[in-house]
Image 1 (cartoon, rainbow, N blue to C red):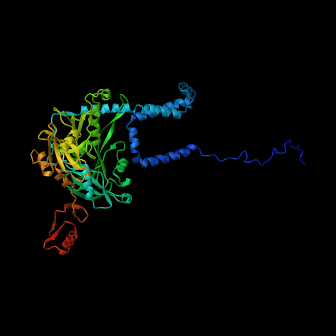
Image 2 (cartoon, rainbow, N blue to C red):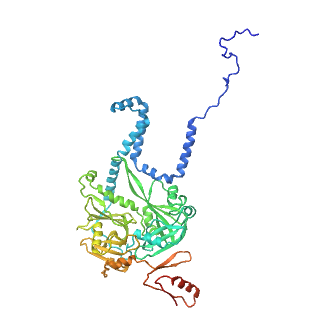
Image 3 (cartoon, helix red, strand yellow):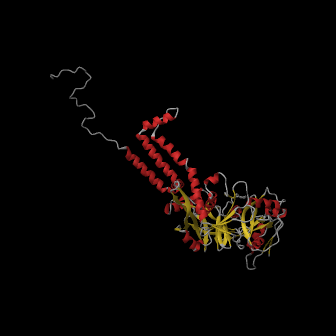
Length: 566
């Protein structure tokens, strides 16, 4: 029997009880440190972000080109660190300055400091950047005494909205759609060019860009043709086959790619993308200004090449094309409102300019035209405020980016006044159904005219083209392409009065639309037949009769249409 005395507390375990668990000397499982899980999650996030970095380009590029945001982040981090070190003192100061008690944390202090340093000073940084860009533009721009005469053989007649309508009306491929149009020069002739992109979610995922649609802009009629051929990397396709995804994945990332342009050279299709890049300035506060970086060229196989501005101008594929970024041209001209400083811009407005607003659908400046000296952008500016006269006309060489500024000695009408004069010259036209569009200052025999297109409200065609003398206000109107080119060449063709007959003719609905279609489905030629006209179909003597008879039978039931087979 044990001589050990009983414990006072019967519930107290004996000292030598081996039932304790876990044993004192046993090794328990230690949980993984939390930073390991956070590190794994961080790596996954970085990997996913890196793969999908083209989708994040807008945010990244905005932060990259806004040094003030980076400065705000650094300042906020320093403020948050200081608050963590002296939280009690900071909280005392804050509560002393305010009537209520606030809980001060490093995160809150950091957010407040970031907002104050970044966003509060952002308008100032934008104004400083505008002054810098204005000084750069004005310093590199030559003032000229005369403008180049227009290229009479290649007039800009068809507007973008009308070209979109022409291209859609002739499209007969149900799995594809016409993408955004832009100007492309093919064999010396300017066209509105658009990608033939897949239509619908399924086709977008499974199909590539099938070709390029070209709409001749030098004639009033719907002269539309297609260049067939799939592109490995295209426009309007799924993201993994899209030109922008490819450029941002495999080429320069921290640049601003502009709108893609379809270029056809010797039957081969190319996607051409001008781009700009930031130029950093430290004083008076950190800011950036855009500058021309170069041109990206993608061939049908998907091979991509970045060309410098000098190399792009020498490339035979890019001859006469738009190489200078058009958004940069407009931004550079617009920035010259700061030519007399920030204070003047927001107070007295001396010699301040603004980009002239224009009538018409989807016809914003700058306009790309062919002149006697080559391709160029034109930008009309008017005085700040309610004044609508032409103060300056800027031209930018489309190949080299050279800026020139024309300051008229005499008072010239602006584009808005030109549109009003066109309306006044044709009071019998129903201006609820027609609009003057795309007024462009055009020089004919060293005299300035506003070339204004008059288009139906639905953009179904070009009713006529009016030339408004920018000095006298005289209006001359022409409804035929031949008359337009002759006038641009310095001749004086007979005017076409913009009466109700021409307006009605523009809106006439054809009874039959006949298309000549190639074996691959491309529309080669379109002809419209009206109810007061007939169709005369002739077949060669050695042709098979049934095909002709089928055509005649198909046309015969149409009201007002007679088909004769000889």
